[in-house]
Length: 88
Image (cartoon, rainbow, N blue to C red; front, top):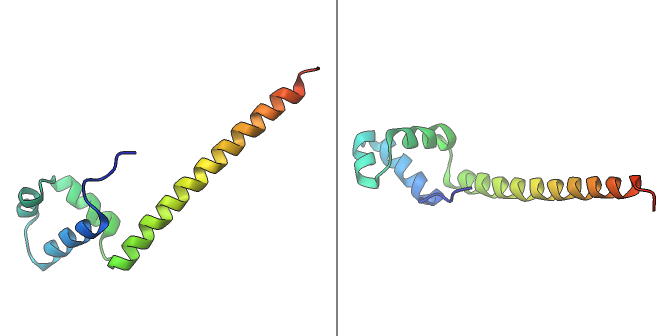
């Protein structure tokens, strides 16, 4: 997965600027982001506090690691089943 150019604190600051009254077009020019990127961030992070945003990132990382562990275990199980089916 591609790493974002912006940290969660930067995204939060950009969203706060928009809430204050800066237009989306101005934010796009200032931070070199598209309108679509801004609205995606707003849909995902809008209404959150900075602490909630950091917690969300931590949970996403934990979820990614857990999915990786499950995938490895499923592969191990599949290999073990293939080995036990063979008659040695």
